[in-house]
Each structure stands twice: as C-alpha cells, then as structure tokens.
Length: 426
Image 1 (tube, rainbow, N blue to C red):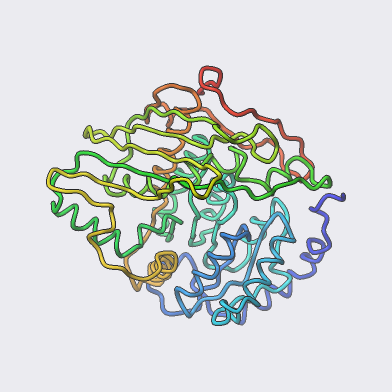
Image 2 (cartoon, rainbow, N blue to C red):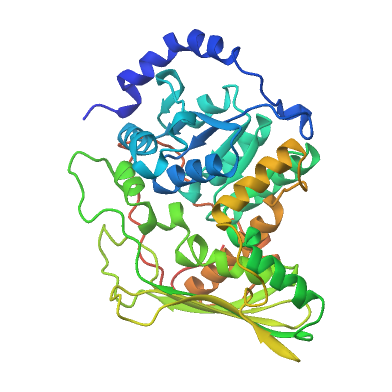
C-alpha cells in the first residue's frame, strides 16, 4: 500500500492555497488578538480529528451558536474525514446545521502534519478531537497559532506530555485565549447549582468523596486489515493502546475524577491504586491496557476520594457512572440539588462562543483539567507499578510515551500489559 501521505488530495492542497486565501476575504472574522467583546462577527472553526467524537463536537458547536460555521477539517485518515463530513452534511438530524458545514476540498487536510496545515488557515476556533496521545502537541501548536480552542479530554497520556500541555496552558491564559475542555459536566446546570449549594454548606463539611465509571469495553476494530502498517493499526484501534488512550482511568474515568477535583478545587497529593486485565485477552485487538483500576486518593486537607473504573464485556453486569460526596450533614450525587438544563455538550460550546465574543464569562479550563488529567495518570501509574505515587513524583516523572517517528507503516514496539513489580515507574 502506498504511504497515505502521498494521497492525491494532499497534492491538490498546494494548488488550492490561492483559492482558500480568496475565499477567506469574503468573511469578517474575529481575530484572536482581539480576544473578547469585539462584535458579533461570524466565528469560523476547524476540527482536528474527525472521528465520532470530532463530528459530534462540530454538531454541538454549531447547535450552540447560530453565527458560526465549520470550514476546515484535518485527520490522518481520509476515509474518516470524508465519512464524517458526509454524515454532518446528509444525516437527517443535522438538517439545521448542515448549511454551516462549509469544508471545501482545499480545507480538508490529511496526514500526520494535517493539523499544522489547518492551524495555518484563517479559522478563529480549533476543536482538538484526536486520540489524547496527540493532545499536548496539538494544543501547544494551537496556542502558538493564537486560536481559541475546544480541547477534548483528557489532555495527554503521560506526565511529560501533560507538563508540556500545562506550559502551553499558562501561555493561553496570558494571551486571554478561550479554552474549553470536553469535561462537559462543568457546564451541566444540575452540577453547577448543586456545587453552589454544597459550597454554601448545605451538606456540611466534606469528609469523603467517591467516583465511578463501571461499564463495558471500548473496542474500535475487531480485526486487522493486512494492508495496515503497525502504526496505522494502532491508530484505528487507538483505545486499546496506552500511549494513545491513557487507559480507561485517563480516557473515560477522568469525567468523574474531574468532578471531584472541581468540587474540591484541588488535585490530590497522593494515590495508591491496583488493577489488571481480568478478562482482556493478550492480543493485538485488546492491546496493553487494564480492564479495571481501583484507587484511593488523598487531598491535602485529608479528604479522600475512592475511585473505581472497570470495563467488563457482559452488558447485563452491574454498571455505574456517577459521583458521590459525603458531608457532615448529608450527602449528594453532585447533581441532585440542581435543576435540569440544556444538554451540557451543547452548553459548553455556547459558553465557549460567549467567552470569545465577550457575551459571557471568560473561560479557560486548560490548567484545571490538565491537573485532573495528571491525577488520572497518577492513579494509572500506581496501579501499573504497585507503588504509592505522590503529586511531586508524577510532576517529576520522565515517562514519555510519544513515538519518536510517525508514519502509517512505522514500526511499533509491542508493549506488554503492565505487571506490578515488573513495571517500573520512571
């Protein structure tokens, strides 16, 4: 199979540059250096990573504000980009937004460097929706390009990458760029109102917290096409590989752990965790992640967070995705003291647009959700190694999972499922 970096579309991009520049002149846009409150001009967005989550982010963004459009897309797979672009344009449920999906051929970028090409266009907002292993590099580049950012969670898969993200997060704050995370519970009316009441003392002082994501597995590919090289295969089955997904405790359970960190307005200072692969076969499809991790976190004030996530395949088994807070005068599931509001997936995009335009509070969740991401990685590393891991240890860890080279046929080491006592925390 010819390397996909040489696809015809990519050759076409060079001839399409002049057309792209000409079309940009037809729009009045918000320049990122103006930041906030500079009028009601149309916001133009691009998305990096056009999988299922990417296309839904496009839908939520367009449903969240009428004076917006999506004009650019980037993905390492052309088939994914074209399939999900077609879904946005033709699926009946998207009828009200389809006319604002205006991604002309010269604004469709394919390859490992596609995100750089997208960021070089005249978009105002970029949505980062690739597998999370790419988040630090993409976020860093988006901040350097002075774009406002919707950044899907988590914000990395290893300590080196998340620290890189944190450095760029500080720059985004200095530049007053809006950064919205995919931790959508932060924009759920039920959660926000409940937290306001908890912080006012309605359940007394917080003495214990709990976080759960007990569900079923995520597996993208059931078999491997023999034409796929190792790196292409791992990308098409990204949730099974720790360097791309971070394991379940990072990729999914972050939602619940972030809720508790948000409520506590702090990150834990230490964790002891355990886990393993109880049912996942040791094969290419199932990769090298665990299927259960339990963790006991400690905050600086002595309050603990008990956390448990697992992915077992039988849908009839017990399931629970929730949070719980115990106070001296009562308890809360973190949303029972509030009133139901707008779909939080749409509400977060509405808040992002309001932040950019100056119609609402300034939002930059880069640093707090980065800290929640590091909290999750801290738990994973404790479970993998069998050791207590402190915040200082994880913030000084040299663990870097990023490959040294990228290409569809690039060789990849087959990293085994971690075994405590054998796996070394670095």
